[in-house]
Length: 404
Image 1 (cartoon, rainbow, N blue to C red):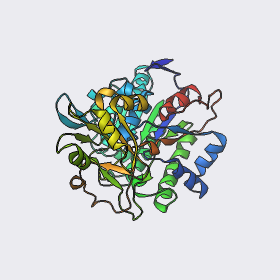
Image 2 (cartoon, rainbow, N blue to C red; image 1 turned 135 degrees about the vertical axis):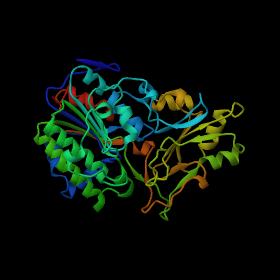
Image 3 (cartoon, rainbow, N blue to C red; image 1 turned 180 degrees about the vertical axis):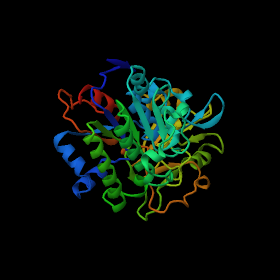
Image 4 (cartoon, one colour; image 1 turned 60 degrees about the horizontal axis):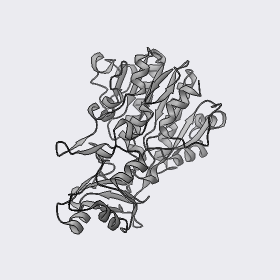
């Protein structure tokens, strides 16, 4: 048994693959199964286990991937967004450096216990966090042509997979993750593998559309190959995805920095959007979660009260309330936390968001409305209490403690 972050895990007796499908609203699977695009999943739902779980809020990539691999919420592991305001240095920074991580990962613990571990992620922003202190293979599709044994545990993957380095803005970036995972399972048979995709497709294509169904059909084929290789598979998501548009089809945005400047005084408050990352073409850095840092003379309670009356807001909380409700590290969020409604996103200032790259109605995530995600295993789970609140970060618990 391994004990990691106050949870116990059995060591795997069969090759075990945990898959995080970025942006996988459960309806994507339902539509693809219903229209015959996912025969493997249809059979798995009948013969294995199909559950719906809650992800972490903010429903963004980094907090949820790190929750999945630590088995714990951000209050434990410390990664509360893709991006944060570092009060110690008065700078806004990406949270892709392992220095921000406050807890060990199960992946590193499994490797230390002598198990062969492989991690493949679509975007390189996650690689260093997922592979922190982990002995084994760890690389991204994005940088698949820049691997070394020292840094990645493998120095050649393109010829093994038989595919070129994919564009970061493509479905191919995720397909490379699956294709590489199957090849590694065939050649090296790791004991545990973690596969994490990108949500480029989900930002552009709604459930049931041709683009979405093609993506999930591709994924289904690779899952069938992994199952044929004898793998226990646990499939979940980091967050869901929703349309974020007004009735005229344009993005429905609350520009929160503009509101703060007008209502509280220019430059007094600082709005941080934790969705921010280097890949903004498909979402324009617009998501449904924001945090506000206030000067001492502006009481958070007063600001909360005024923002709660703003159309499009689902929840506005003080730092303490948000840390308790969403299990977040209180020292890494602002004085006020804002979560917008299902069809609404939050920006900073209208002048600072370039939406020219949007070639489809805006789809995004970040709020409570994107919290429900699939949790599917290709095994029955005897003894599992399904009345408890299931989380996406229970994936390894179910895969190792129930599905073996």
